Amino acid sequence: GQNIDQPTEMTATEGAIVQINCTYQTSGFNGLFWYQQHAGEAPTFLSYNVLDGLEEKGRFSSFLSRSKGYSYLLLKELQMKDSASYLCVPQDSNYQLIWGAGTKLIIKP
Amino acid sequence: GAVVSQHPSWVICKSGTSVKIECRSLDFQATTMFWYRQFPKQSLMLMATSNEGSKATYEQGVEKDKFLINHASLTLSTLTVTSAHPEDSSFYICSARMVGESSPLHFGNGTRLTVT
Image (cartoon, rainbow over all chains, first blue to last red; front, side, top):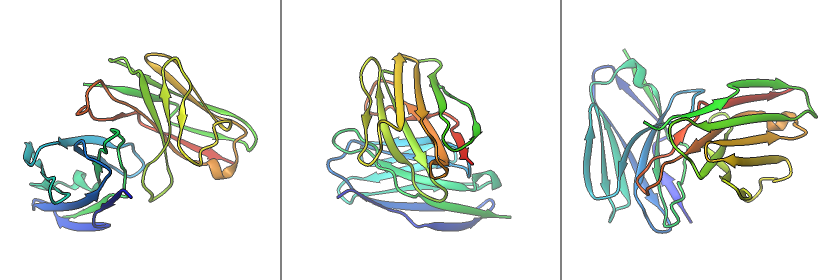
């Protein structure tokens, strides 16, 4: 079966750094997306990884290890507006996106 | 960047009536659009894949006669919830992606449907 494992909830402090880990099992693999979803809103695209390594985009970075079925999203210089759910979304061999419940990130002042 | 527009943002309807939701790709052509549903504190659930000029592909457990999808052009897909019931109350979100396996899904703003 296809499966995604992320922490249900994390708490971090404004200005700090937080790493959200994700492990996945899919039928084949064609890259992995990270999305941000604020409460009551639709998801917005953050990053895409298809090769092993780190992709940096401003305050956000995403890492992938295909052999380990592992990815993480790193958020630096946290701001209150970063409070949201973060979704690790692998793409299987049929290019279907596999959605989990994500990680709810709470930022405290 | 790719923009997907969804309308209406929210709708309240009475049980037994039908509701139509529109999804438009504003700056690109989308031969395929995706319709999702999300209940509170749950993950996105793919309902169906809308294909321009042909029948939609529905996920297991989704009633095609209840959730009518029409993809009449390369920029417009509609979802009609027929004979709505309170249990259909949910957040419906459409999405589309440009050509290419690395192209992300871009989402509309979603439609919050409340059936009374």
